[in-house]
Image 1 (cartoon, rainbow, N blue to C red):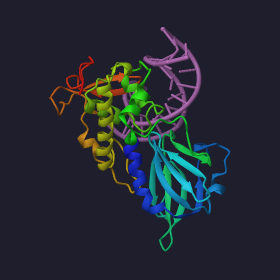
Image 2 (tube, rainbow, N blue to C red):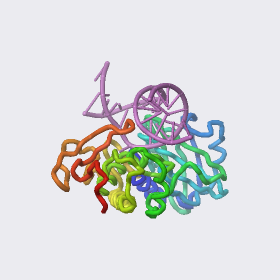
Image 3 (cartoon, rainbow, N blue to C red):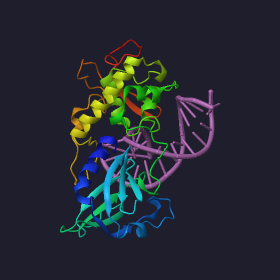
Image 4 (cartoon, chains in turn cyan, green, red):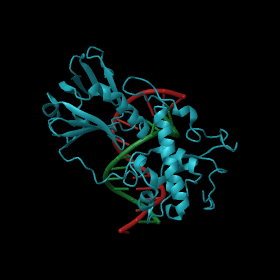
Length: 277
DNA sequence: GTCCATGTTCTTTA
DNA sequence: CTAAAGAACATGGA
């Protein structure tokens, strides 16, 4: 479910509720979602204030008043919900913490994740992660060119690699490659400078539009208030196998690259490196 | 029962 | 050394 636009949407819905709030009661209902596993999360959170919440890559990062940080990663099926503390817990709720801002009622933040590919990571005071690539929305073409240099992998696989760019996932890589007119099986080192520049613009354009539409709801993604996104309604290629391309009418194809379903238009995205715009 | 899934990481293969 | 392929993780929906 969650790629950069969905995670950003969740963060946007959390900001007004948790910024400056004090953490009251914390419950870790499944301790195996925590890394490091032995960390005492309850002791670290209880009584702390949340200075701010922000997104880095696909992570929801909480910065605490004592300069410690932790983050929640939603994995494939994770959700954050803002609820009344009295609301019944749904199945697969793994973490809850009550927060309170001055003169406002207590609300409860919940992390729910059936498949448990997501989890909670305690960062402490070490805030940087050298394994994460740059944020796509801040990316300059020259920076993208640097990140793409020296690999012959398929561009589809390269863009999914969080060390290269942090935040894209299967939906938005497919959408960005269509927007840029680049075939997903193009070898990364075959991209011309003009194509890299076009790709850089395409990535930002797709992500900005997706954030504006509050992400894509294919199955069950909702933001922290339970609101679904609607960007899936204007996908050009993702999940549109055998439907006509909105640009040219060609039927969208689905292939598998690196074990991931990949959608593209064989007319708008030519295999040969002939496109220069 | 089967296949598939918006993610990440590890192992095997080439 | 690089990177592709495959599996693993765990659950639920079609």
